[in-house]
Image 1 (cartoon, helix red, strand yellow):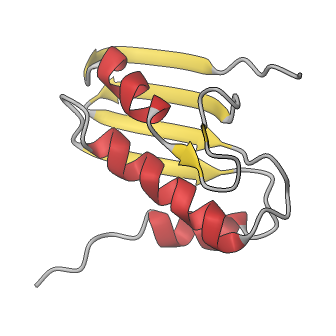
Image 2 (cartoon, rainbow, N blue to C red):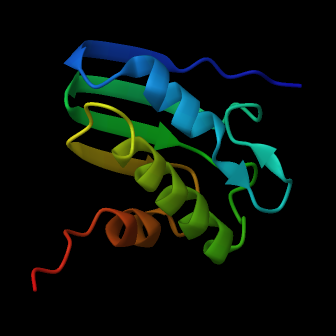
Image 3 (cartoon, one colour):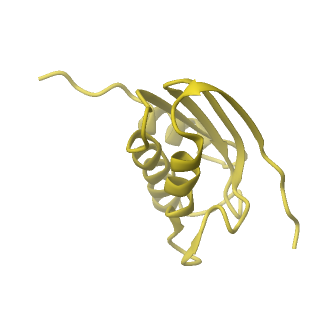
Length: 111
């Protein structure tokens, strides 16, 4: 099994251990396993309360509904971690990555 290492950068603010715990609870819906066990996180940068996560999927043609679900679950999990004030999630290597990234990172509608 190929294991990918991911980079981690932190500058006080958000709780690193809590973020990692939240990410370990994000499940790949096709495989039923945590994305951390599958080594899908490529980069996790924390600067104060801002968190930037880059990830990939198990296949470049993973069904779009699963790609968006995983990206949304990552964002929700990270935003629920202690000290996190904003989160950006970036999918890489998927044929619809641009659309998924745009959808998951769009600003909330004021109302």
